Every structure is written in C-alpha cells, then in structure tokens.
Amino acid sequence: LLTVLLSLLAQRALAGVTRCPGTIQVSGLDDGLGDVYLVNAEINAPGQKGQDVTVDQGAVVPRLFGRTYWADSCSNMYYSNNQYKAINLLGKTFRYTVDMSGLGCGCNAAVYLVSMKLNNMSSQCKDYYCDANHVCGVSCSEIDLGEGNMHAWHSTMHAWDDGAGASCGIGGDTNTWSKEDYGPNGRCIKTTAPFQVSVSFPLDKYKSLKGMQVLLWQAGSSCSLMGSVESYAAHGR
Image 1 (spheres, rainbow, N blue to C red):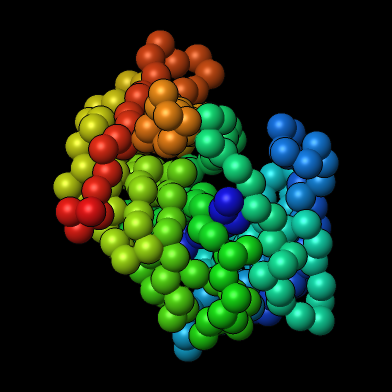
Image 2 (image 1 turned 90 degrees about the horizontal axis):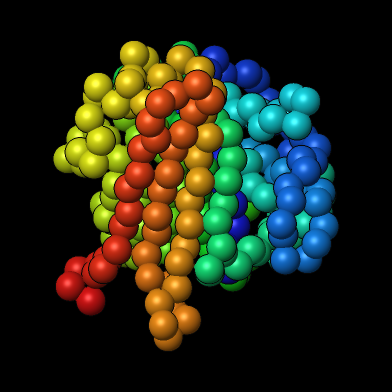
C-alpha cells in the first residue's frame, strides 16, 4: 500500500506553498472514488522550502522543489499520515501522461510510490514524508514509476535501505534504451511532446509480486519502449 507522489526539480520556483491545491480525477481506484486530493509539501528537504504544485485543467503541474502527495483529504491546519491515499497495485497497471518538454540535464520530474500512510514519524519535513534515500530523515521502500527529463528516464525499485535500487530506462549506468530511441529527437519517444507511461505489477503463481514492467508510447510514433525490473535483491537479500 503506497502513497503516490509527484515532484519536480525543474521549473522556476514560486514563493510560498498552497497546501491544498485541489483535486484530480483518477479512474480504477479500489475505493471506486474518482476524486484524489493533492497535499503539497511545505518543506522539500531539511533547510529547503517546498514550492507550489498546482492543478491546471486536470493536469498536475509541479514547480522547482515542488512535491505533492495523493490523499483522501487535505487540511490547511495540519499534516497526518492517515490522510494519505494508499493504493494496492499488485496485479494492476498504473497509467499516466507526462510532458517532459523543457526539462534539460540536471532536472528531474518524478512520479513515485512510498508508504507514507504507514509511516507514523512526522520526519524532518513535518509531513510524514519518507523515501529510500532518507531525504527527510525517515526511510521507507520506494518505487519510482518514472523519473527523468528530456534525455533520461529511470523506473526503479528500492528497498527501504537501498537508495540506488534496480532500474530500467536510459541514463547513467542504465541503458535499457538508447538515446536514439528516447530523447528530443527520439525515434520512439520524442520528449519535446507529451507521451504515455504504463507501469504494471504482475503476480507470480503464488500471487506475489513478480516484478515491474514499464511501457512508454507516443501518439504518431511507430515504436514503443519496454523495460522491466525483475529478481530484485537489495544487498543480497
């Protein structure tokens, strides 16, 4: 059961944070409810203020150092781990559309899952945030559905104490795809235009998680990009 987060280290920073920026419509949730509240982080990391994440015609728009959480409710008065949405993706697929245009090297836009609803420690960011890199002082397992920019993409599984994790995609030491396939002039994914992301979590015969399967595709493209993370063992476990 994981909380969905969206963050961006890219666009121009704006002063101040609106904690409750609105709701978005999401289909296929276990509770059958389509409205998902967004809860913005006021602290991005210890010593670094967060920035606004807004909703524009149903799209989530983060700005530099902006991070927002999916929730069942939002309060302007307090943060609570009980307000965050927990979703079960075992045997299911998560789909979304992303626009990376304008995000150059050094920028990182991310959609990822962490278990904030199960975390009862408020953390140094005061909002119960946790991740595999201990950013706000509390560690937890993390699944990066997709993070990157116009030149790089990683989909990564992290155990709570494995900041590196296991990835597929392109960039750094990960080379599932080539720069000819993904990039501003990519053969399959041209990152100057929006594209679609599909991340699946298939089960094995014992109904346990088999791995993570990733598919990127784009309207008008003659090819798609596929990747997977399977047989992940953190620190030999």
